[in-house]
Image 1 (cartoon, one colour):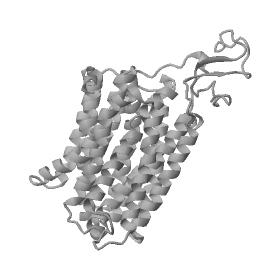
Image 2 (image 1 turned 30 degrees about the vertical axis):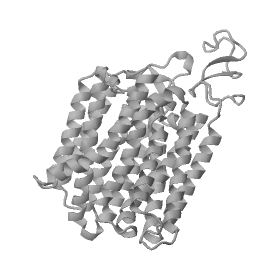
Image 3 (image 1 turned 180 degrees about the vertical axis):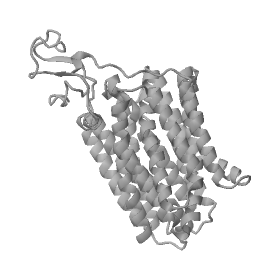
Length: 448
């Protein structure tokens, strides 16, 4: 899998992603400490509001960035986003009011919402072949998992030497290093749309593309299932470990590490697996595994037993989070392959931005749901309800994604004149790789 790093442009882009993620992880730790300094016992409310602002920025800004990426230099856009993030990080140590935190978080996350989908859309153009691109997706998944493990450890080491505001300097350094690495490569320019394609598209085109393509509608449902399970893990772990199981504080990161380890193992295996098994089978298997894991967790928590956690032992929680991480990776990692298969190269930024926005809308739903349920009910109920949501999402994805899913589809254009350049003399029906675009606004109804 590491052979893809031999490609120099991708190697520098991947390194930029890693250093930016490490910086983001440092900011997460530092922001929690800053919130405590400013708000004391209300720190959790400050962090919850900051998380909601982050998700809102992702949902609203990403589609605009995807449209902009089709008109301006991608390198300029990526570097500008990194510089904006660095400025926000450097300003955070100097705030004195909670609303200052919120304003800077909006700036930082708006820049991230511009950076991430454009970065994701650039990688398949740098790596046009399927196998290297699949390896790149797995490496990207590994980078996210390693960040969740390495950043807290790095933050702890730095906090032993310097006060926490210096962590924001580390964050800014990561973003500046990312900008320098992006500047060091030549990236694809916005692709001009051929005249026969029907001209340009607007800012809302990405969402229309995703929602009109059956396999991408299924991808949105899959993202909802991942958000349901992920919210249970990320919001519920501290309560399950400390209150339900009566474990010490140090076991909280161990439980989260089990989730990351499961994801990493599957990410390492996927490039070879996807050579033999189609994306639909792999992703739906992962999607149906998520409600099974949450359902088993709910049963273990609800069953009577002599110990505090019901019938759930500590090893059971670790196993559940390991399997949940593995299933999550099976769903998320191949998603970029579906987007690349479903959009013209000129429309990839819009497609990635729309998926990014819709996926985070799912998290905007499940985060508060998990938080409210965990705070006000017994621990078995949020696991059961979020597991039910994950099951509904998996069933919807299986129904929306056709078993036979060819990329080339027969279709007709009754609205076009016979001499239109797209028809190339085929006044009746014709067959080609089908993407939603200005000339193909609806999926062919006769498609299987």
